[in-house]
Length: 271
View 1 (cartoon, rainbow, N blue to C red):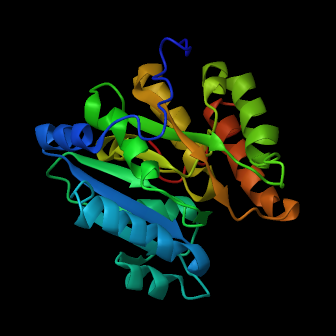
View 2: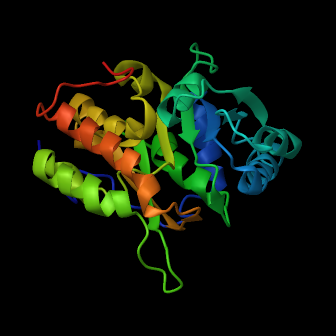
């Protein structure tokens, strides 16, 4: 199955789709738009993210219907900061990112078409275009099932070096075992939007593997035309020390090799 410039929905510039077009698409589909943020120890950043979504996309225009923060066993004031900013806060299972995302999905009503935007809670300089950009392909097209954000990820003052697990583990492994998916700029992007029906079909893997597993599973189930990327500009977030990335790299590599048939699959909620 070939994934190329012509078959993958290509990136959109930030703000390329006006709110009017998104609102019209939402109304035409009678869709519910849910935003879910799995968060652990993000007290310093979660408030501004929630406030922006609440003010610009809920109170002012009604594009987003529900905003949930899944407090996944935080040891700081993440839950309180999110609640003060206007989010519905629920407790996650404390088992990892994928499990926290799955717990958010279980809250959303199944009877209407539901579009779910997942965001990371450690982003600084967050803008509403993170949400509107991700929603664009889902609200204006029928084929797209999964949307991944793409962006620059500066690690140093010169704007270089971010995404170490992506560049050193995920992309090389995908190029070896799922070459078509090597075209995806940010396969581990936490900024992801999807149809809830897709998540029910393929499930969500546990832990750090959730993003790359969902990408591969969507490709295998629905083909390359079901995947889109959007350009979200620059993403700045908390960069972890290299040693703390080892468990993430292990889980990502295990998910890719499992789906490639190289290792026994431990899908954690997958098909």
